[in-house]
Every structure is written in structure tokens, then in C-alpha cells.
Length: 316
Image 1 (cartoon, rainbow, N blue to C red):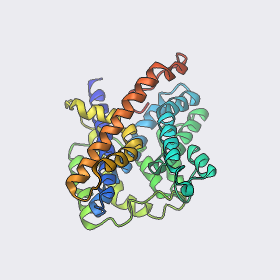
Image 2 (tube, one colour):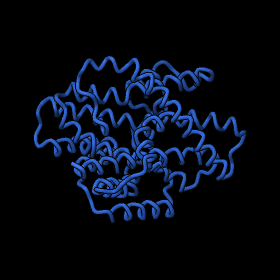
Image 3 (cartoon, rainbow, N blue to C red):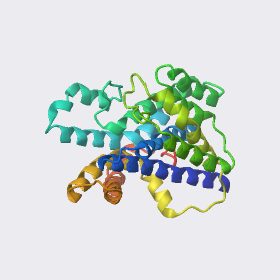
């Protein structure tokens, strides 16, 4: 059982890397550093997609039934997402041009919109939820072989938006040798240096106009990263990496508010050093929010669990 534990920890650390990549890209964008490297930091979202395909499909097979699986997924993603979306709605209420009741309701329902969800980073969750519903259907009907069937849905959804192929790749992925991590890093850097254009912008989830090129440039590195780290066993990982991995979802959702708050404190952010300060401020803000909410969750909201099986530490 020890190797499995280390594989899980390595993927927990990869969640931290993915969240920090997205945060770094947004901090650079806030500071006007909108080059190809900043755009390439959106690669963190691709890592999240492959991780979900790899981990959540395994978690689904351990679920008691479809309701149990969806309950655990809902406890994982809904409270923080709804809170962040409502906070964004409150912020936009002062400038209501971008806020309509319809857009808010569609955002809360994870329904794709041409202008994207109210909370910008929520575009990835629209695909996540679709993947979860597909897995729940497979659990309900007892589909077998489960992993192949789990990959089939995202592969079919790719006709609407190719980025769903990342879920399918993650489902079918197997642990790889350590060299895969180095190869993944080299491929990602090469793509950043060659120029990624606008492939980072896939928030228009209805058309997915940039998704095919994004898959071509970032799909293989994402698979190699996840597979290479899944194949690592027996390596000790620093506690801060595991901690950030556990908080990665909150960092992803609340970074926008931290960036805005830090930008107001700094007054300006045009240099790389100031962008780094922006990112550090946003990270600290997200961790404080996450800690406060986690404390409230344990004290009050978790009582609704009713003694049912609790989520797994990773993927649950």
C-alpha cells in the first residue's frame, strides 16, 4: 500500500503546481505582462483536466452507487464555487452591465454560455460537471469495462469541444517512468517559446474555437506530467506542496479576488517583481479564505453528511 500512498501524494503536489501556474499567469496578466509565457501558465487548467480523468474515474469505481458518487463530488466542488460565484455577482452588482439574473443562474447551473460563466475560472467546471454526470450514469447502469466506458463519454463530447479529450486521456492513463516528467516540462517550455497565441482562451465553451490547437500543444505534456508523477513511488514530498495541493481548488477559485485586493494595495503592478508580489498576495488571500471556510465547514456544514461514507482524501 505504500507505493500507492506516494503516488497519491505526488499527484496532490501536482495539483499545487497546476493552481500556482494558473495564479502566476493571471498575476502576470494583471501586471500587463501578457506574453506567451504568461499565456502558457493556463496550462495548469489542462493538468487539472487530466488529473480529474485519472483520479475521479478511479474514485467512481469505489463509489457505493451513483448517488454516493455525486454526493461526494457535490460536497467537493459546489460550496466553494457557489460562494465564489455569488461574491463575484456582488462585486459586479456595482457595475451591472455584465450581470444579469439569467447569466447568474446559468453560471450556478454550470450551463455553457457564449460570454463564459460569471466567475471566469468557472469555465473549467462546466466540463468537470459534465464528466461527473457521465460517470454517475455509468455507475447507475453498471457499465463494464468501466474505464473504457468512462473514456468514451469525453471522447464523444470532443465533437462539441476537443478539450474534453484531456479527460479521456486521463482515464486511460497509466503510471509512467520518471523521464516522462522531464519530457513534459521540455515540451511545455518549447511550446511557450514557439508562441501559443490565443490557445489559452477556451472560456467560450460553446464553440471551443481554440481547443484543438490547445490539445495539440498542451495535451501530450499534460498526460506526461500526470503519468510521470503517478509512477513515482517512495519519494518524500515537502509538506508545503501537499498543503498547497489540498488547497488548490480554493486557490483556483478565489485568486481573482486576491489579485484585485493586492493590486489596490500596491497601486500599480507593471514589473515582474510587482507581478510576483501580486501573486503572493493572491495566494495568501486564497489560503486565508480557504482556512476560514474549512473551519466553518467542519463545524457546521459537514453535519449533513449523515454518517455516509466520507470523501477520499484525493479525488473525493
